[in-house]
Amino acid sequence: MDSFLNTDTFFNTKTIEYQYLNAYALSKQNFSEWGKVYAATENIRFLNIRLEHIYGPDEDSSKFTTWIIRQCLENIVSIPLTAGQQKRDFVFIDDVISGYNTLIEKLNEIELGWTDIGLGRGTPVSVRKFVEMVHETTNSTSYLDFGALPYRHKEIMYSCADLGVMTAVGWRPNIELKEGINSVIQYERKR
Image 1 (cartoon, helix red, strand yellow):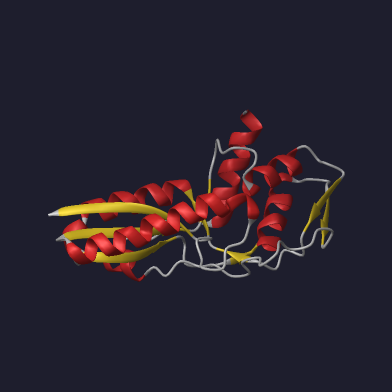
Image 2: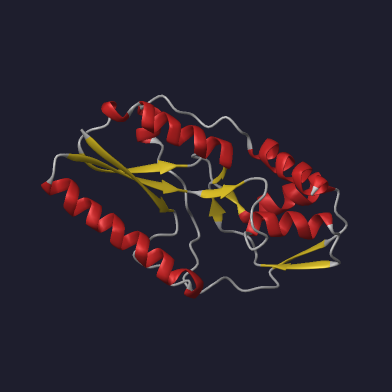
């Protein structure tokens, strides 16, 4: 039986208007829609895996999680931020990898056709709380200037994985947020 695992993203919504993500999000939306069509007309299993906010060591500095960790480690005098009320489902890269491995091992337990699968921790945290955890864990002296920046136009204020399918195939995330943040901080200190 043919199966296809498509990697989608939490910010792939019908209302996405982040200018820097439009082409990327559009390609994800289009591919997922083609997956629905193909899964409906062929005898395949198309898994649309919607990843939440992934973080981990060795990420590009343009990624928010790496950027804020580096800012705090460098004790930047003042870090301009939004109010930070957006909630994100931060998921450590090792949990994402184990999630994919579980899906591959349990493919036959998932129905044929198109299936939307959330992959995250299933517990959203405000961006502010994430930043405060980083700040505390790094012992940073930086001033966190919450509210200095406006939210993006049509900011996604809440995103959280529906873990129904992942739970059904026996997967659970293992890395707690504080543990994951600490792992990235240790990596960045050695870098």
